[in-house]
Image 1 (tube, rainbow, N blue to C red):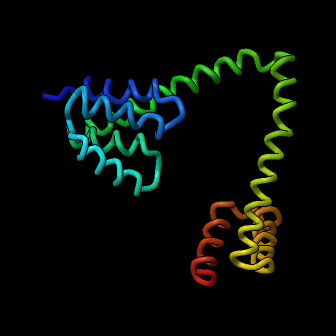
Image 2: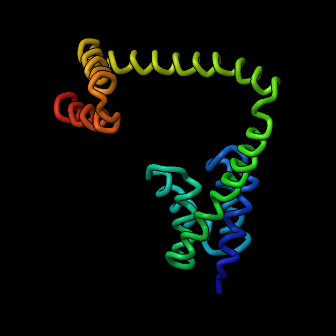
Image 3: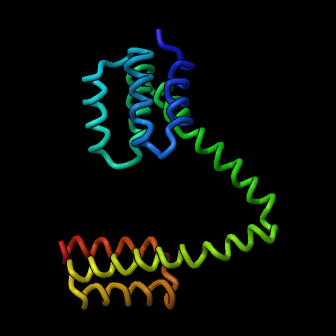
Length: 177
């Protein structure tokens, strides 16, 4: 009989050791689920993995939710998903404390000063690539018009960005689809 503790351990260990995100934890989850606890065969795991890859969202939490539900229902699903995300959550809390502790340090301020231009450059390159793709797909005039109208709606008329994004999505679905 499966226990909630086994579910927690089966997903907590890959969460801790799976450095690199969900894809890095797939073999670790497989080892726990197929080899250690024998909840699935390798074929069942492969089918579940294929289905999880077809759905949107992080792979590790989708696997945890499915396997947890299969083994122990809704509570099992919640426990497995929690065990998957708690290592990252704890690390973020610890790193935030560390950052808050040293936020006034001259070294941290200098590091931040050097990182900002790099991040700005990366965001600029990403925006340029986005505009190139959008211009090629929908035309420069359409892309520029959507950008200008969005800017006016958000900056001049103070409309919430969520509504502007929704309007742009509807426009795209109706006229650019």
